[in-house]
Length: 145
Ligand SMILES: CC(C)(COP(=O)(O)OP(=O)(O)OC[C@H]1O[C@@H](n2cnc3c(N)ncnc32)[C@H](O)[C@@H]1OP(=O)(O)O)[C@@H](O)C(=O)NCCC(=O)NCCS
Image (cartoon, rainbow, N blue to C red; front, side, top):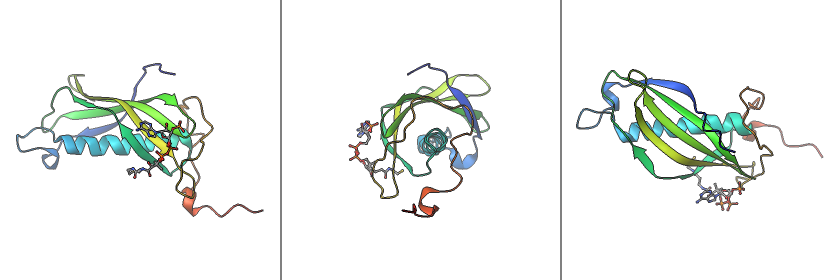
């Protein structure tokens, strides 16, 4: 499944602490934001707060951003595996709509309480909050037998 439709959710205001020594947006800040955005997207799609980053493909820094720019981050699921979810990411400048970064593949793995990969059971994107867990998996009471 890959419909290519990216939904841009989170916006960031590029502030002095986000800059590199050249005075433009620091790539490390951007990757931190993207990883968090992907984690939240995976939790919403897989209904499990215990999902971890497994893999990121090459990162293409297309253009830079300046202090004071507004940027927006978008993700879409491109493949639901058995225990994994693959996403595509794009970051763009809200003023110019110019692409700042693309990542073709970010893979998250759904974990069970034992910390091992666990089947998530989903095959399609949800655009609602129907899978959002009511609490973190490791805070749930153990199953009754
Ligand atoms: C996540 C982790 C438990 C997976 O362990 P693993 O032994 O690779 O598990 P598996 O081989 O069963 O693979 C699990 C899934 O990941 C996918 N996967 C594994 N390696 C991959 C890779 N290099 N690229 C893409 N997908 C990969 C597998 O295809 C599988 O997906 P599927 O079930 O949908 O087919 C383990 O690698 C780990 O703990 N990594 C550290 C995670 C972490 O700390 N992340 C950073 C902080 S969030």
